[in-house]
Image (tube, rainbow, N blue to C red; front, side):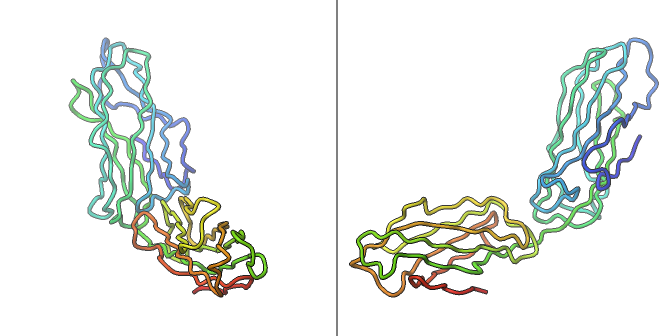
Length: 264
């Protein structure tokens, strides 16, 4: 059995063979495991809470008999130290004739309660008629949940002077920044206008993942009826992320042709 330290191999291990340590006789299957690979979503070799990863490897039958009904499963061997890893129940391969091979892909995910540490992940492969499972073991570095914090750090309204024409176009520019300790995923920004204004662009922005300290520049065009123009235009900005806890819901009081300042 080979042990792979996944956090140091840049997501890929070449030419690693894990041989079945059983006595194989003529007419029986003989399985070997190669191309063992671990990868997480952002490819930093650190599986974080709410992040998905993948363990994959190739099974080849080097024996003279057909391998019947392979059952593949994974578990955290040191689950008392590193909690919160989630795997599928089992993966099944019906049969493999001599000389054939299959690539197995095992999804792995860090739940919200994932703890920081080094998880010893054991992948077990069992044949229909061989009850002692073969094993592949990987060490995967994990990190606990770190909350994002999304804020508008600057905003400005650009418009024609005095807005004295009907349906004058105006442009809202704002900067959204993640000032939290972790990334914000599935992020969406929505803009709501008063009844005397209407959007020119779509008022929703799908931002997906906003990393720690990352900023996004948003530009939004809308028009204002001149007969309802006033010194300030109240615009509501709502930002939500996966947990619906670390976004914002605020009213920006936009003043025409002036920098509205920074928000902390």
